[in-house]
Image 1 (cartoon, rainbow, N blue to C red):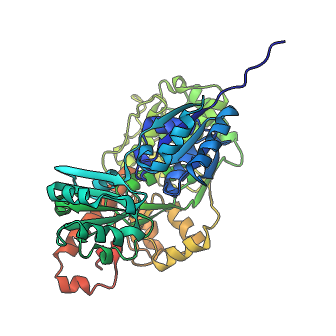
Image 2: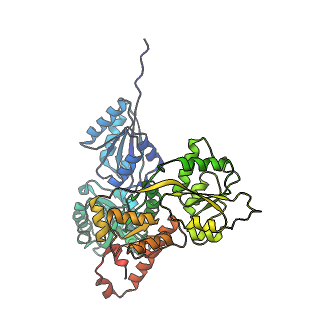
Image 3: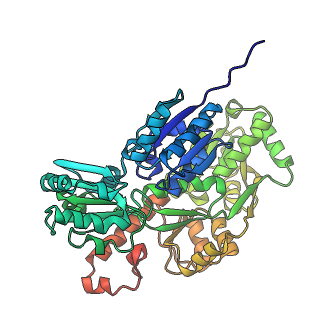
Length: 526
């Protein structure tokens, strides 16, 4: 009788780094994606856990670490013996925690396969994000037990260079007392950073004498930086100095489209809130699109004009239904409004012939679209696949230029369900610093399902048509990029924020202190 061997699982101790999901190493990412069971420490931020959960297997189980090191090790070993891949996810670097070292020692005494995946240490990583270099003799440590610190050694490090410690906020007073008792000058510069590498990271600078009071209100884990490096923070701080840092930005788009815009906003330091206002659905009757696809294959059209990414997606989905591909566009010229739409076409291996160089709108395209010439254009028909609520401007302009236009409903846009009450309240009360509108329908639908944004909310629109609609609804348009694309829209908002920050810096200190609005919204001057 042949006995089937039970599969053997693996154990990985994975360093999550200081909190920013982007600082996970590739090896850490791979271990987490392959995990069947993830045990995580309380120091791992929920924002990072959310990213890990989204990319992990649907069957992966996530549980907080509980008990002594031996208890955690037993859970990991049991999972491995059951054929599961188990991960202990810890903040910073695994070997920066004495408890994790003990767990690794316990696992090493068994036959279980294990690995230790390094992570960026909390103290050193957050110091870098805070713009505090650690030159000369330096010490960087993730501290679990403040009473075990060698303050004499820390004082030496401060005297000859810099120091960075990750500690609980409740231990700051003990660290201050220990440094002063060890002879550290009370006027030495100190930085305290909360929510290190997170969306709301905040650093306060003071001195050894005063940093406990300066950090009043900080909770959880904080990073303390001490020494000469703190004085360079004004020039080297980058994370908290990004153009949109701390701005809460409303992103009213379809669920599928919001992700790319949110990623760009985060790169500039914003905190995006995605609110689906539009749902895209197939047309009620597919006959028009069926005829259009057949006409493309049969050479009925000289041009196809795409006005949105959704139109591109709708046509290619219909192509896929019939087993067609980009080769069936042979001989047909393609025009696109906007770079995002053009990129969607390029993704299918086709280079558009026409993208307006000036205004990215129907009018901009018409200004560059040649009139029909019976000799140069033996085929005089244009396919215009669009939304059911699209305006007639483009079709009418093409007709005036002598083209026959098949204006086809490629998809329908319907209003999404209202967002939760707290988001509706934030929209109306000024809880968002900015809102980005990418179409007239996003304006109409947001107002319809959630109400008008507050007057102090910065309104950014992608193009002139969207600006007209926003104005019709009584909104003041603050930002409009020269070209209608998501990257340009976010870039324009970032430039606007920089301009406002410079205005704030130029204001007299008394006037600045008298401003009623604080935080990112203090940059607005009406």
